[in-house]
Image 1 (cartoon, rainbow, N blue to C red):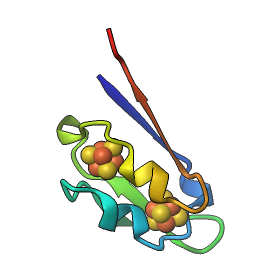
Image 2: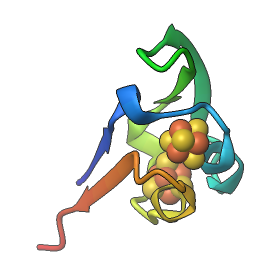
Image 3: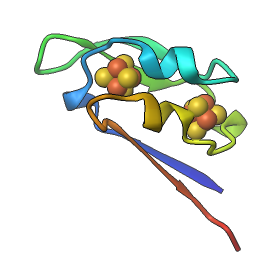
Image 4: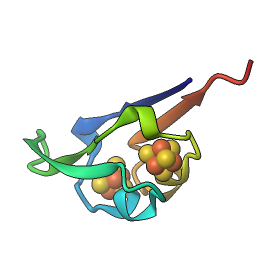
Length: 70
Ligand code: SF4
Ligand code: SF4
């Protein structure tokens, strides 16, 4: 099972994570955060493999991925 935490208040909506996702699961959402940016949202969590490419790409460490290994 994969769990993703998106600290949406720190996101600047640059879209680097969305471009990195091989499954195209991340989108820039319509909600504007306290910094004035549209933060990223995960579109379909059931399709997320937990590869963490998105988290590695984010310059602001907005995304954290937890993957159950057992
Ligand atoms: S962990 Fe991988 S599959 Fe899941 S949203 Fe990030 S890049 Fe996409
Ligand atoms: S790379 Fe980081 S700052 Fe840029 S849209 Fe994704 S989560 Fe937000």
